[in-house]
Image (cartoon, rainbow, N blue to C red; front, side, top):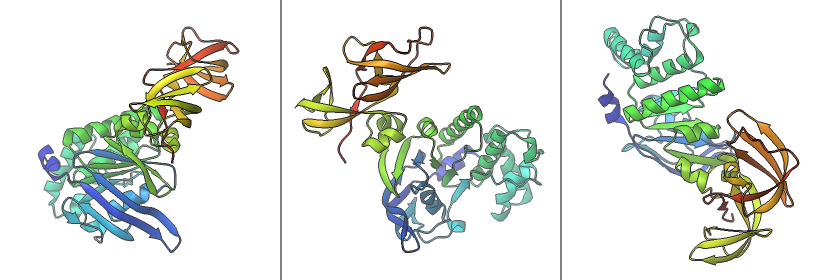
Length: 357
């Protein structure tokens, strides 16, 4: 199995006005439009029950759309069963056969695809090479770590050379340190081979780390689509601001707007930033914890209510007249004392106004 064979098969995925109902009353996915470019990794992110897993299962053919159209490449697959779609899925549970060797697990799907035993073995060994498990072919799954088992599941999917590779919460069974390593492995394989990947997770950090684009879902619909940085820096509303990383949501007042730049006021503090289509008056502001500047020359007054050392940074809870905020600082050698008063301002690229719903 060559890398070129996989790269050449990568296909785009498109949803056009797709809805999925269970029974009469339950709408799991509500009239969504979505485009996944060939060779890109797109993550479906959202809380439990938002529709992300149902969306993934509709790509796989494990659920059928109630209405709308699903395209993979140039083919309308809306009504096709899973067996007739050129996709592979890596499940949360890995779904490895415990009594089979690693090589047998990876070759399992090939046996139903018309390959001889010799061809299946060659492809399976090549798949293990791709995921860095050369020499592990004779082991049983129980003799592997969780991360290695996940790589076996990825290799089993890759050897089928699918047009689209699907991941359903692939790291949820791993501890934090291993999760970071395996997500880097998955991202490296995807980029090296130019695979089209649709990836489901509820973990914001995981989505930010692996994605070309993130689709944030809420209540069976798409809340916002964008690159990790665009979603982090310019969330469309409070839900996205809260869900993509942590954010302080502050009340402010837009005093004036000139050339799409707003001047906002919080107490006596003034700050300029893009208006995002808003007009003068009360507004909401999202500020990431790292973009609150404690000890700024200009700002509003606050008190250190709590200070927590977490190794690589200090975390502070700040109490101001208008509410509580969460801030972080990299300086762990000179922690601020609880109870002292400080001036808090914003980093130049810090806050963002939240457009009204």
